[in-house]
Image (tube, rainbow, N blue to C red; front, side, top):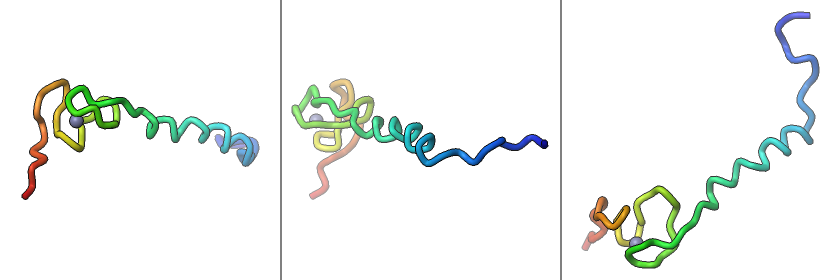
Length: 61
Ligand SMILES: [Zn+2]
C-alpha cells in the first residue's frame, strides 16, 4: 500500500462535500447606499460603493 487513498471517494461523499460550495454565492445583502442586493464584502455593482465609499465608477455613458 502506497500513499494513495484506500478507496475511490463515493459520489455520495463528493456530493455531500460539494453541498457547501454554492453557499458563497448566496451571501446577498442589501446595499447601504442604493438598497439593491449585492454580494457581501464586495462593492455594489449598481452604485459602485463599498462601505459608503465610491470605489467603482459606474457611470458609463
Ligand atoms: Zn448600491
